[in-house]
Image (cartoon, rainbow, N blue to C red; front, side):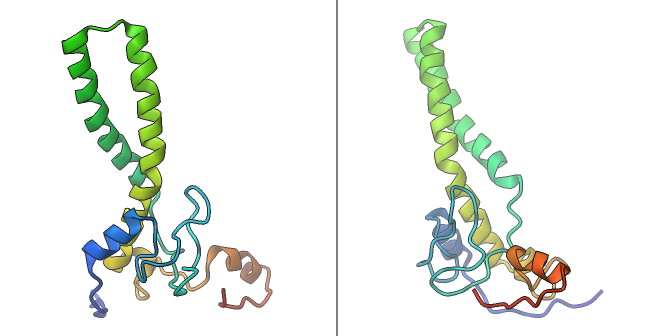
Amino acid sequence: MKARPQYPYRPVGTALSRGLHMRCPACGEGKLFHAYLKVNERCPSCGEALWHHRADDAPPYMVITIVGHIVVPLLLAVEMALHPAIWIHMALWLPLTLILSLALLPAVKGALIGYQWALHMHGFDPSDPEHDPLPPSRRAQAAMGKPASLGS
């Protein structure tokens, strides 16, 4: 088995915090997303390549766990203390669950991207087979035989 090259240490806590605040894990200045969950290919401030992330299904699973641990105890506490009608539960807990889920999803995805960046996971490791030197916007051009510049 081939030995992995050693890369500079990237502080995991800092990268997680920056990602949680939806900022570039490298510089903490540039926005991580250019739409609700659409990650920038490069940091607008420092130019760090961000297209290598593999967030996939992990953020929704984490958000489900977090929201469940918030909503279920609250629901049970309200039920035990007040015994409200079912329509009151529905009017209270369904919107709260939806709002929490939508609010937490970008932050959790950002934290996961920061974590992957800090640990040189997936394409953030140039020696990894998943590493692709071209961002998604340039791959189609390269496949059609057009020259693809690496500039942003």
